[in-house]
Image 1 (tube, rainbow, N blue to C red):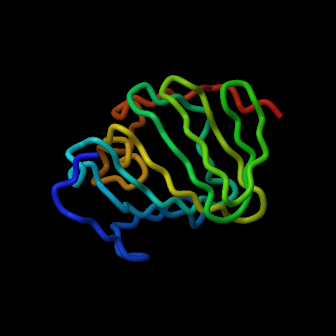
Image 2 (cartoon, one colour):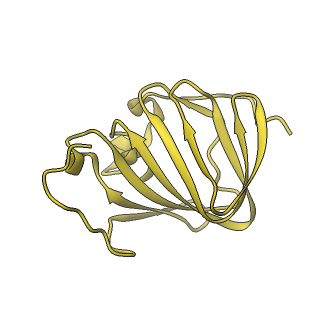
Length: 143
């Protein structure tokens, strides 16, 4: 962790982008603040706005489910996940999720940083997942 100064991002104080049907992502720590080592995003994902099955080719991703419940699809497994659960996903492992109920709230850490701008785009050029080394899979998660 390469921090030169302390960082405090109060609730709702990070740059926030809304998308889909009411989902939102709030940038808690940008890569520029950590020397590019890691980034943190708080993600409120609404049912119907879930990401497709995808693989990160550049970064490891951790997820902490703060509120709600999801079904996670990780490397061919289907896992029921409840609030308070934590997952660490290495790069090159396909994964996706579906939300139970209306919404789930997750805290996501990406290491190294960079892909946080897919969640919280800086401009229209950040809309392409390939820019961040994400591979989107055509097959839907196995039920």
